Image 1 (cartoon, rainbow, N blue to C red):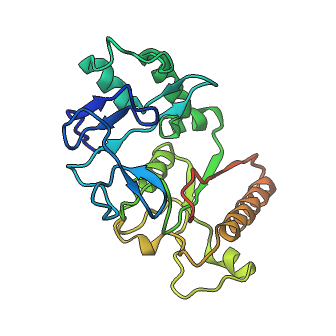
Image 2: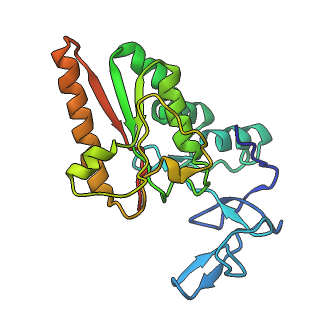
Length: 239
């Protein structure tokens, strides 16, 4: 579990885009400067390409309906616990209990057990590449969380399509990662051993995954099973 320090959360009602943020410099305002390279305001005050702890970190929202939003589950719990917004709760922000119901339906890592319970023969393939917009950590904790969730429920699960399906689509790479089903990487920190290289276009390995899962379905049907297969991209693919 990742421990996050929310003690510096601040709310700036005058800020229309990111009113809730980690207040790195402690001035109570979302502090940003114009980045001439992109023509937009950014909290990277020294423009070195990264956010430091003394700079503000904006928190984005998720749409609940056409006019209301929520923050992540832990952020909603924290602002409710501290009373940060008690006297100025935005009309567009849902209440804590509604936010909990929203995430109960959308946090897939919490739904594996229910899914496999309802569809016992459900199988999954998790697609992931070297670069993605969900996580930048080299250990790919979101990939591991998804893999562990499926395997913990006893489901057939595999990370990325096998090399032979990529070869059928014209992709031939030496040392291409090729994990068997239900096998986790020997070292999650060594992502080159299990993620798809950036030179492989995402549509190619997505098609390869579909072909492999289709072959799985045909095999299981021939054995008298009725498989329900699932391709779990979860936006883990290369950009």
